Image 1 (cartoon, rainbow, N blue to C red):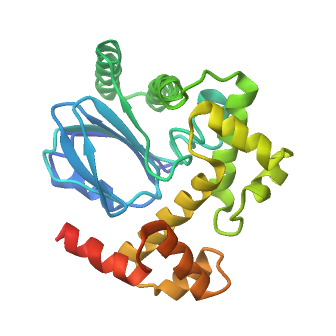
Image 2 (cartoon, one colour):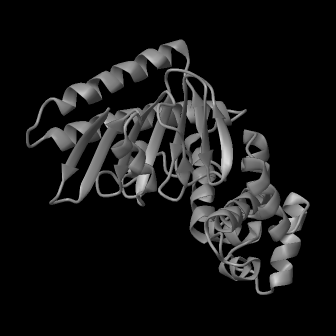
Image 3 (cartoon, helix red, strand yellow):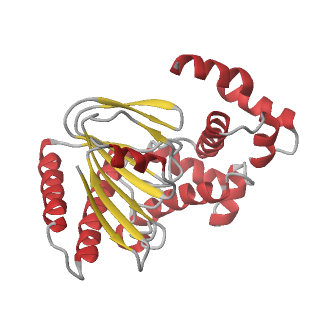
Length: 281
């Protein structure tokens, strides 16, 4: 199944698929697409940025255009794929408040587990998506966007509930979200909590206390994980040397990057790349 909405004028694309055909598998090779994947039929395995990710039945994963994905045809997934022109997560954040949590806010794509009630809700939404593809008119695109926004709002509420050990007031929630967004924007040049505390007009201690309260990762760990995600992605999917990767990620000396990488993984970049390829082969 591959149902497409395409607007040449807007250059927007929205696709509903189960990755059971070659054209849908080719979507994984295209750049600039958000992907929401629901393991609807069974447990399955996907590879994201070079790492195996086990999805249990009725778990949903949210991937950005930056994530490089691999999966097998007929893996039991039901997916929504769309580009920025169809719906820009950053520009429309005031509508769904998912920027920094569902997308561009984690070292790895977030996963939500659906309860029995939420399964029924998602099934109803996907039924409406399919139904909308049967109606070709001037407002089809807007109807699909409305359904997408509803899904993103529901998923954002779920992930807020799952991730935070302590319920947050709106200003605290927004501060955590802003921190994640800023890390995504500046991780290549800003490597300390103080850098981000200055941007947020807060003290590093205030940020540390807030993240400790919520049960989220420590602020410095969030920075380091984002740097490491990009480092590993470049190691796995580019021909750049460790020295070139280090410079791209804001390290003035190759030795500094190598030391940072080894502190995070226990081995130098080249050794890590070699061992990782052996595990996947």
